[in-house]
Amino acid sequence: MIDGKYTAVVDRIVEDIAVLLLEKEDEVIEQVEVSTSDLPESAQEDGGVLTVTITDNQVNEITYEPEQTKQRRESTVEKLDRLSTRLSDRES
Amino acid sequence: MKRVLLILGLVVLIGLAGCVEDSSDNGNDSVLDGEGAEDSDGPDSDRDNSDDSDTQDTESDDSSTGMDPPPAVEGELELHHIDVGQADSTLVVTPANETILIDTGDWRPDGAEVIEYLENRDIDRIDHLIATHAHADHIGGHATLIEHFEENGDGIGDIYDSGVPHDSQTYENYLDAVDEHDHELLMVEEGDELPVETENMTATVLNPPAGDSGDNLHYNSVSLSIEFGEVRYLTTGDAEDNAEARMIDEWSAALEADIYQAGHHGSSTSSTEEFLEIVDPDIAIISSTLESQYGHPHDEILERFDVFGIETYWTGVHGDIVITTDGDKITTEPTADETTDPLALLELKDAIEDDGQNSYSLPGFTKVGTQASA
Image (cartoon, rainbow over all chains, first blue to last red; front, side):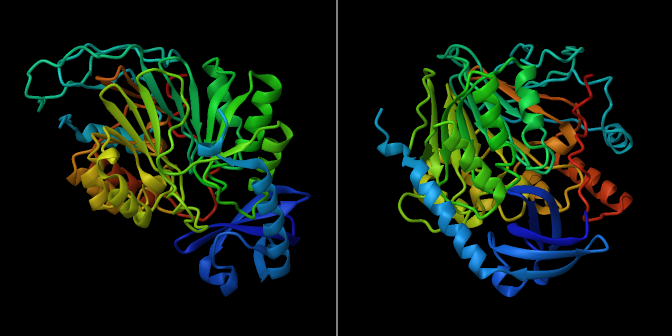
């Protein structure tokens, strides 16, 4: 893991462990796991965009990004709505 | 109810603790059946040892007729629990050779291990691709797998989803792959039947709930009951106790199954006592790595499986686990032939935890046991 600032998303909370997916250029490049309690309170749930700073191979700082979270969620929901059909509504 | 009596020796445990990949003795299939059935060679032709010497027949059968009628259905249904480490991926091959793939493993292998598994079996098309929910240990291979089969294989038929989105790039790449290959995402809910064309087989969706059910990924995890002949298979993805309770209320009898893929990798969030009472499986499969950083399967689940007398398989120990049924008999072929006693598995787990430094770093998708037949 190269030191630096990364955009990350909380993939899931597995009890006291939070799984974060670190990104670079629209791809997930690394997974780090931290104590759920180390996340900002508003980020202690699935989803949510963070900025994660890695220093000396360690997670040093985690910041919740409410604006980016909102934007990303809106664009994902829009994409999902465009692509999805209820199975029960599908014309056969 | 059908039961297999297992005779376990300490030898098994010692063998396990020392070397999970013992390759010399993996030809033992377990056959569950009401009548003393003949063993059958399963679909796993890779195995170089097809010794049937340890076939287990059930000791009793509750059916009052004494003689089971011959299976009313033709062919065999295969359930392949692919060993994808701390993740899920299950391939169903119907008697008519339709393929259903439920989840595609973690994001790190990026579908490679699942694609390899499929290609080793000359499967070049997925007729029904299901994402139980959008966590990266379930949809990790979706984007690459869709691209791979659309571009190099015979394509993907239908793609089904719980309809609950995620902010992750893994999820977005999956949507983009669906989009690029002009697929639609079919949102399923309880009561839906997957449009399988195989006769005498149904695949019924029991979760997510109908109507607005919020955006919790586990609560909305796709759960499926597959029925072929007299045999039922239940898989619930990462559904937890609240989803299980809801399914008990809405679906009770439909939940009953002979084979159950343990919810949420054998976590204590799932497989509640109430749920197991209703499902009442003979066989359970846990999909998680041997040294799960989350402690999966949890001790209390293995203890509970013991109380319920469930023959238990764990991908971390048994590798790929292939279950075949003709609609009556059930044959289980793990890659590594190890104990299926839940308490013996618990002892093994404890031994490994005491032994290893339980770091938070992943053991890398190490596939324990999957090379056993090489």
